[in-house]
Amino acid sequence: MFRKAGVMAFAVIAVAVSGCSDGKQASKKNFAGAIERWISENKDKAALCLGLDSGRERGSQDALVLDQQSSDDKKALDAMDVLAANGLLRREEKTEKSWFEVRRLAMFTPTEKGRALILSQTKNQPGLGEFTVRSLCVGRLELVNVGNYTEPADFNGLRVSHVHASFRYADLPAWVKDARVMAYWPDAKRAAAGDFKQTVTMVLTENGWLQADQGGIGPELLDW
Image (cartoon, rainbow, N blue to C red; front, side, top):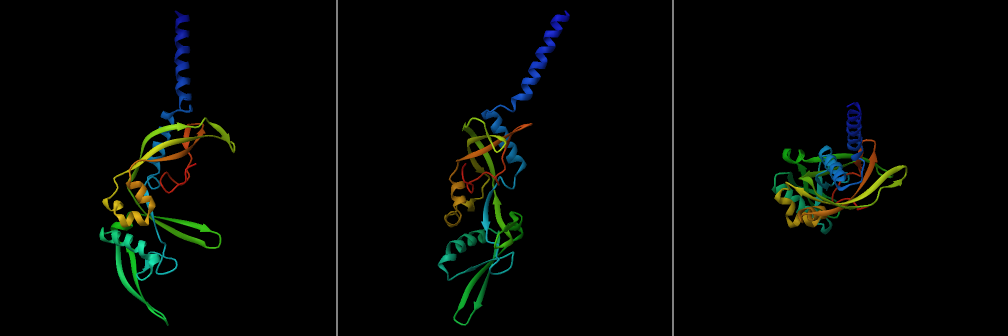
């Protein structure tokens, strides 16, 4: 009787140990769990974020000012007009006089609806100093499936694996698919097209696999 109880106890311990170490195995299931956990915990990064000019050169920090007569500003002007038509930006007409010409400008500022979708990040770049980068973030990232992955290997003291996965953005507003928006933001065009593939770096920790935070998953990142 005692012998049978001992065998049973050993079996239970073995199962428990096996269950604990399971999360550290390189598998599609574990990688999918780690990616979905990252998405859940990083909702701001796991969205489609479209960069807005910080307005450092012209206008205020909160405004984007575009030259209506400049071909260089044409795509941006068209895209901002779409956002304005959807209640995210407010457009105002301005003129700028110089000795040689009078320039017609369009100044865009976020509405209350648009401000709720804007993510502001402070960055520091040599030669430029500290500046603010603003992005309009919409939709939510979804994992479609996990494909092939590299065998875990040591890299800079870490155990890593590169995982090929497919993603898509859900709940995208209709204006993302507007031709003028997609012409200005290639990321919008790629996101609107449906599923896209990306290589994600995974790192093995004491608690199992975690996604290396490289700023987010999305079309704006280079694949590893």
